Amino acid sequence: MSDKPISTDGGSGDDSGAETDADATAEDLTHTTDEGDVQMVDVGDKPDSKRRAVAAGEIRLQESTVEAIRADEIGKGDVLATARIGAVQAVKHTWETIPMCHQIPITNVDTDFSLAENRVECEVAVETTGKTGCEMEALEGVTTGLNVVWDMVKAVEKDAEGQYPETGIENVRVVQKEKRQA
Picture 1 (spheres, rainbow, N blue to C red):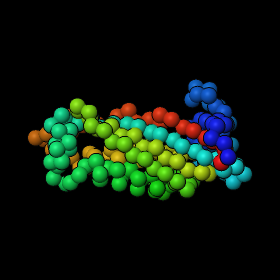
Picture 2: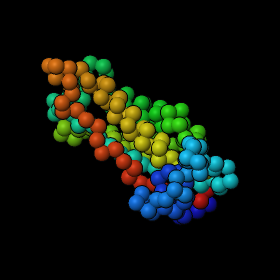
Picture 3: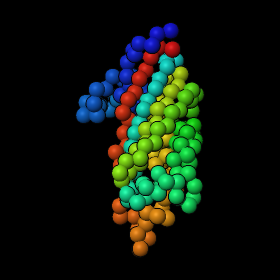
Picture 4: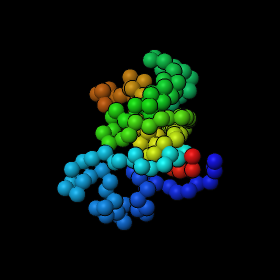
C-alpha cells in the first residue's frame, strides 16, 4: 500500500482531468447525459482509493455572541459541541441530501471549530476508501456545522426587528483534496 498521491479529482468525484471550470466542456459534465438529462455517475469499474477532503467556512457573528460562546453562556447549550455533532451527522447523510452523491463508506471525520473576534471558523476533514471522492461530504459537514452554530445563537444574534444584520455564513470552500492508492 502506498501513501503517495496519485492524482487529485477535479472537484466532482470523477477523474476527468479537467484543470479549471473555465476549461470544462460538455464532455466534462459527468452528471448529465448527451440529451441533457441528469444521471448518477457510474463508478462501478473504478478501483478503490484512499481519499481525503477538507472543507472550511465561517459564520460572522457579533463580538458579544462570540464572547457568550466562549463563556458557555448560550441558553441552548454548548454551541461548539452541538455543531460538531451536527457536522458529523451531515457528513454521514450527504448522499441523502445531494441528489447525485453516492453513499460512501466514511472512515473518519475530524471537525475543528475555532473562535475569532467576530466569527466562528469551521474545518471538516473527511476520509474514505472507495471509488469516488468525499469533498461533498466535507462541504456538507461545514455548512451544517455552521448552520447549527447559527441555530444555537439566533436568540442573541437577532436585532430588535428580529433580523440578522451582522450574521452570515461565508467563505465555504474545499481547501484540500487527496487521492491515494488503496
